[in-house]
Amino acid sequence: MSATVSAAALLLLALLGAVAGCSSAPQPTPEISPPVAAMPLDERITLPPTMGLAFHHKLPGNRVEHQILYTVQQSIRAQLHADYGSGPADPLLPVYWSGSALATIRSHVTGWVSKHEQPVGVLVVATTTYTPPDTSGTATVSYCANWRNVLRGNATTHVVGSAVQKPGTPGTFTTLTLTRGPNDRWQVSGIKEAEHSPKCPASK
Image 1 (cartoon, rainbow, N blue to C red):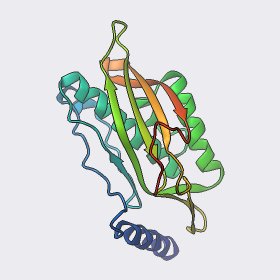
Image 2 (image 1 turned 30 degrees about the vertical axis):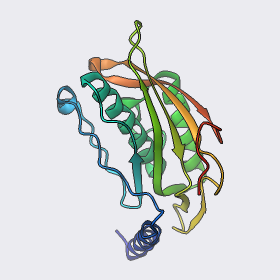
Image 3 (image 1 turned 180 degrees about the vertical axis):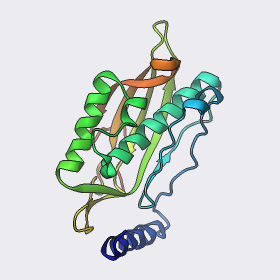
């Protein structure tokens, strides 16, 4: 790593640390551990120190709920990993996303990469609701995604810009549908997003 890039990374870390030092700033939450059956195939996702996920949810009530919430966590982390620089071809994306949902997420990632931007901060996912698989084997998870504490970092100049979500605006109400894919693993197969949804609290 060059001295210029190292200095830029330290600058971003210092900024993130300063934001995290505020009492109201969110902190990344502990990760859900992979289900035993998924361990041999588990894809480890390492996010940069300047980006984190705060995933708030109820404790899983059974093995299937554990598997599904773990998949949701990993799908979001895979998206952030791709946003940060790997791009829409990131091989982690199709591990957790499929079908129309995969196409949607790749489009989101392209939006970051095409502008030479990287997310910096902590994405907060809360108000999580889990609906067990129905007779067709489709489960649903909905949540509010709050990007208020995520800033737009320039991947070329390493200058940090504005927040993704403006202060005082509601988050994005997101509904994921999940089905079993290859190797009997759960994947997000559908996604619906409503920005500035009244179902989500306004950011501070």
